Every structure is written in structure tokens, then in C-alpha cells.
Image (cartoon, rainbow, N blue to C red; front, top):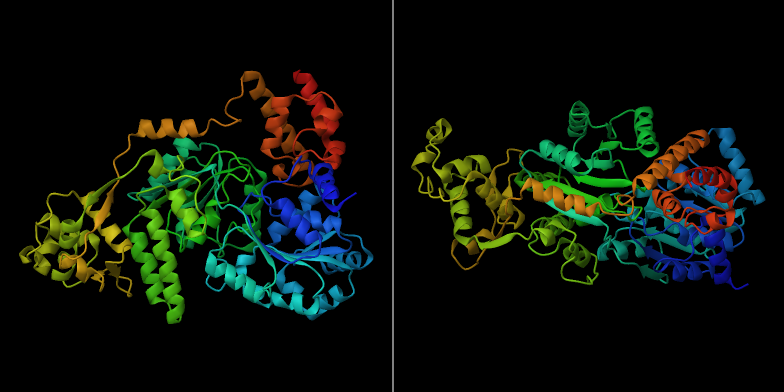
Length: 608
């Protein structure tokens, strides 16, 4: 049997899928044949199979470098469920347990062993590798090698030692997100100069991207959850630990099953919260970016941001945790002037080198351009990663569904910039708006700003409109915040061309959306295979979910490791009556058929 025929047989028999997706087959053939490669594939695109199947095709142990304990544990649990011999080595194991895994590596007990980069780099483990028959090295989350990236792990830089010590063992580096700069850095730092680069589409068409003007972020988030994701699993990202805890507590008070996660919480509590999120249905995790990398939960229906991420890569990586099962999901963000000011101040106030600040500013500019986009967000997002979109309008982002108006805001920009200048460049947007609108406050008289030439010259715009103007001027780099934390807005050199009339400024005017229309649009988005069940199918669906939860609890694993929702949905649709018919359902391999087939058929026959 040829290698790729064997690969297809493994795909069907072990993982239960009838065919490879995208470029999986190309990658598998290359790695199984002994080649090195870098694979860029979106979250949920099937990266794991790109090294798991070559590991089963080649003799020896595949060593998978993985940065997180939770990720290793869940992937090994999923492999065990599929009947694959796998183990992990990390700090959660006792010395005796770790020693047993190491002995198993030497005796050929395992096909795959997952290990953290810190452990892999120890002299003791490197010596173990010398004595172990090796099939390949897989470096997961390879973007962690980038010092410019959002998940930098210094240990990843040293992983070039694998090529130096084991030049004949193929290596596959994998990531879901990397722009051109990050790809180049991965190749250089991991010594992948002669490796093939496989880039799949970055598009996640099932995710709806939506960015709203921030007024009251928490209230807007709650309205979004209640209207569109009541009872769904989701992730809410906040910038600070304090905001994480406040938001989680507030959501709980409002009846949402929410938990908090950040690096300041004790390790046992963090682990408990993560386990609950992974194993229970309908949990909303409020977290800093310390949470999420490698989270395999497929039924996360939304990812929300209450604070602006630092880059497009960060935004893409975080939003990509929604809808891994391919079903409809939302990426929602509330964004305002304060976010722009905060991020620019963090960059300028950091002690980093000038080059780092320039890179960070460029990445922030790209994200702000996405936030202020007047054309399809998906097109702009894909363009950032060097991919040409199939269409100029995706039809599944807020800009496509409710296009913003664009207006010539040059005069308004000149008034705003002049006001910042006339008041000494010492005040934030709130005070400047009061000056422009001629609000005769006590603070206005205190500073004498009721006497400046810009007092009252902006009455034609209301407060919200002016806030949008200042936000966009900051996003365009025409205003910047001070570096001392006061939020004062100052002019930049770029503002001169606007003030002297040599540069036109076009701004976006987001029309107010009626709540009923927004909810109707959201309802239409949920018309997927789970939402179209008739009453009998819904009953069977709930019975299968209840059975799955019990099986998962019995095995001590997350429910999705037993079966994804997509597999349960296919069971409802196909209603198989025999073992052979069950075998045709995607996601049911030989081992799972043996473990769960009789129980499934009993439920299905009872409903028949």
C-alpha cells in the first residue's frame, strides 16, 4: 500500500474522517517523506492531523513541542479516545509518572509524546532523545518564537537545537497566525531555511466580525450576550486583571455563568476555572490574553473584546477561538477613543528599544485601520496576512451587513485639532468636546477656555459624533496621547497638513442600528444545522448531548473529546441503525465505534 493510501486509511479508521481538507494531504506527504516544513493554517483548520498522521506513518516517537499543560492534556486525551498511543511530559506529572513516560519512549510504547519547550531543552531530556528512536519533531504554536509577537516565549528561540542535534529528523512548525515579518522570524530562528512553507487560507467564513463604538462596554456586552448568545460558551477578553475580575463578577450578578482567568489568580483556581470552561456547557470565560492559546473547545460561539488588542495577529488569534466546529460564531469588540489613547501611551511609555516601538506602532496602526474600515473587514483582515479575498464583500461582517457612511470630515478635524492646540494640548477628549460645543462649565471658566477662539465652534455635532471624530483622529495618527497617563491629546507632525488645508480627512459615520434589526440579523446568522431541527430531532439531539456529558464525566475528559457537536448533529440527521452505518458518520473511527457504538445505537433505535 502506498504511503498516502495508508494515510487515508489512518484518517478514516482512527479519526473517522472520509477525506483530508485543504492542504493537509500535501503537508502529510511531505513530512512523512522526511521533509521539513512551516504550516500556517487557521484555528480549527486541522493542523494537528498534519503531524499526527505522519507520526503514525513513520517509525519511532514523534516529539511535539507544546507551550501549555492544558493543551497537552486535552490533545493526549483526544488521541487516547481515538486509540492512539500518546503521552505528555510536564510539571503536572510526579517524578515516578514522568520516569515511566521516559522509559516508554525508549521502548517504543508511544507514537507521540508532548513536551514543554523548557523540559525539552534540558540536557537530561536531550540525552533521552539521543537514545530514543524518533519519527519527527512538531513545534506547535510556532509564532511563540517571534519577539515581536503577542505570545512570545523565550524558550522557543532555542529550538533550533533540534536541527543541530538531530539533522535527519524531519521538523514541522505550525501556527494559526503569522504575518510576513513573523514568518521570516520563525524560519530564521528555527533553522527552517530549506523547509517548504504551506499557507492555507486565513479565512474563517463562519465567524462574523463586528466592531461597535464603545459607550458603556459592559452594558453593550451584556446586551450582545442576551440577544444572541444566551446560554452559549464564550470568551471575553479584557486588558487588565482588575477589569477581568470586575467584569466576571458583574456578569454573574446579571445571571450569566461567568468565570475569571488571569495570571494573578492562584494556579489551582485558574486550573479549576479552565477545566469548568472546557467540560461544562454555556460558560463564559472573562480573561486576559493569558487564557486561550491552544484551547481546543470547538463550541465557543463568541469571542468578545472589551479592550483593544495590540495587533491584528493578536485579534485574529483570539477571535479564532470561536467556532472551531465550523458553525456560526461571532467576533465582537467594543472600541473607543480610550482604547487608542491607552495603547499608544503603553507603546510610547514603555522602556523598549526604538525599533520595537516602531514595530508595535505599525502593528497597532494596522489594527486601527481594521477597526475604522469602511469596506469589508474580512477583506482587510486577509490582506494583512497577504491573502487576496475571493470577493470584495464577505456578507458576514458588520460593514458588509450595515455599511457605514463616509463623510468629508476635514473641517471637523481642523476644529478638533485647533481646539487641542488652543487649550495647550493638556486635556482629554471630554474637555475638548465641551469647548467645541460651548458648554459653559465651571472647569471651562477655571481654565479660561470659554475665551478661546474654538469655544462653541462645533455645536453642529453632538457629543457622540465628536467622540467619533476624536477617536478616528487618534486612529489616523493625527492626535496622540501624552506618555504620563493623563489622557491629554497632543498634535502630531502629521496634523500640520490637515490644519493648513493640504490634506483631506474622510471619516466614517456609523448609522444607528435598530435593535430589532440587529437581533433579526443575528437570528438569521444562527440558522445552521443545529437550529433547524424539528421537535423530534431536537429531543434526540438533547438525549445525545446528555449521554455525551455522562460519558465524558465517566472518562474524566471534556465532552467534545468524546464527540464534537458536528458529529452529534450528523447522528441526528442520518439516524444510523447498524454498526456499519455508524462507521460512516464523520468523527467516528474504529476505536470510538468500539467504545461507544452500542450506546449510540441504543439511543438512536429508541428514538426510531
